[in-house]
Amino acid sequence: MKELEQRILKDGEFLGNDILKVSSFLNQQVDTDLLVKMAKEVKRLFPEEVTKVLTIEASGLPFACMVAFEFGVPFVFAKKSKTSNVSGELATALVHSFTHNKDNLISVPCQYIKKTDKVLIIDDFLANGEALRGLISIVEQCNASVVGCCVQIEKEYQNGGNALRNKGYKVIALASIKEMAGNIIQFN
Amino acid sequence: MKELEQRILKDGEFLGNDILKVSSFLNQQVDTDLLVKMAKEVKRLFPEEVTKVLTIEASGLPFACMVAFEFGVPFVFAKKSKTSNVSGELATALVHSFTHNKDNLISVPCQYIKKTDKVLIIDDFLANGEALRGLISIVEQCNASVVGCCVQIEKEYQNGGNALRNKGYKVIALASIKEMAGNIIQFN
Picture 1 (tube, helix red, strand yellow):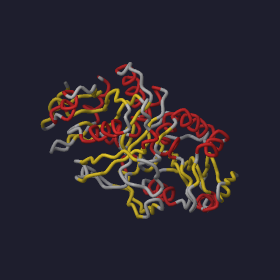
Picture 2 (cartoon, rainbow over the protein chains, first blue to last red):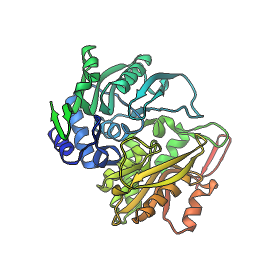
Picture 3 (cartoon, rainbow over the protein chains, first blue to last red):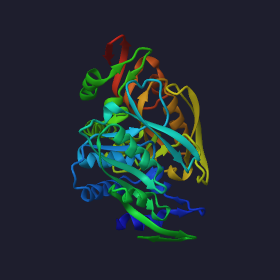
């Protein structure tokens, strides 16, 4: 998506050590105009039937919310911590966060993902694919179908996305980074 | 807001110990239709000029996102944990979470809230008012103006909202619970 790529070049900050910071328009301050345009693009890229959108807290939430609105369906998010008032069967997965360098046991009550659901999985970043793998596992534990995965930005050279594509999942990034070195970023 | 009250009566679960669970339509599975209606209602209730929406991760994010979209402005969220790639001056506040029974140091980089910003603060629940007080403090540390606070559900009997109103802040809840006892819930 050209507009997202241009915005990354204009407002993204390259902090070295493979860190691309997009907090000024995607990740802590969110440009809702851009968010809506991205959600419409997701709708175009996934003409399949979608009955539910699934993401993981916290930074995937705004994008998932707008995407779900475009599709006219509810969205569900996996929580990272167990709150005191959860009941019923839970689908869970262990997900390693490279940003915070810790393992999170993410969970979704099975009652929110039915067997008949066709689930589009949404996240902000895709690098090693940890979060997407966990979310796919949750959908499959609930015996529902994975329509595909869509992320805002993929670091393609980290291979998490291609590993999932090789398993047959439809995985699309709105901006796919082929190479990031110094202040130079190359999109695919 | 009548539709929200009716939905709470229909799909909310009263778990005792003052816990109202709305995870099936607001808090973990989110009904985007209802979310949009709530956002439009917020726009109607706050005719003031708003240049930015502020919330706290994670469960306030979807509501804040839709409200910001209605106002046509960006939104910013306070983070609960310090990530490795934050730079520049931070506005911070200590907020106690009663759900998780722990203190969180929430923070927003000051560059995302300018002196000229007129900020509408958004959250899902209002009980003791801890989160709203923290967010108000963050706006004021950035020398910006607080337009007001709007939440989905207020437990009015816990007085967090009224304490803020007594200080002169405009605080509105879309559903305000006067009393909750056993399976009976009374709105104001």
